[in-house]
Amino acid sequence: LLGDCQIGKTSFMVKYVGDDGEEQNGLQMTGLNLMDKTMAVRGARIAYSIWDVAGDIQSVDHIPIACKDAVAILYMFDLTSRCTLNKLVFRSFPNDSNSEIQSRFLCWCSFPACLFDWCSIVDWYERARKWNKTAIPILIGTKFDDFAQLPLEMQWAIVNQARAYARAMKATLFFSSATHNINVNKIFKFITAKLFNLPWTVERNLTIGEPIIDF
Image (cartoon, rainbow, N blue to C red; front, top):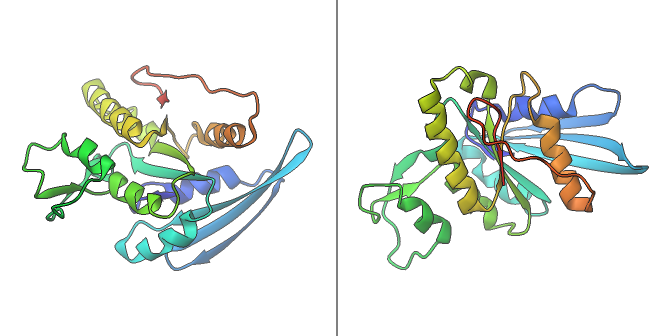
């Protein structure tokens, strides 16, 4: 799980691991929170080890160990705080920079491309991709219960922006809420089905005011 501080990554993980009688355990260290969950699927036992990387700059060093052998990487942002999706930082690009993800996102910026780079989700994405290019990418907007209270025009703008990011990342997009368990289990069902070629599909939902699912 990657994303900025205070966006609900740990709450999301705890909601999924839960306390439902299945096996789970965890480990905490500075900048990294690990929890395991073992479940039965069609008579087979599947164990997930979930790594939650803290969102501060000091925790960036944990990205290699968390992402290197991951089968899925969940990039998370707060639906009620757009800066966790598209925060800008001021820096100069190398003259020979040819990053595909960088070029796709810079078209959103009206300032000279040589001066600005996208941070937050794109930065997490690029750092993770250095260590793992095969993991299933999932883009998750958290705190949907609070997001649903925003004006519809603001919801529409955030939905469109999140969908554009997901397309550029070739990621499946889910809006979720740990508080109300919206799409939390569904996200892991989706990952499990993809990994093991199980006959389970998720339905696209693009209705404004409802938890978005797009792919």
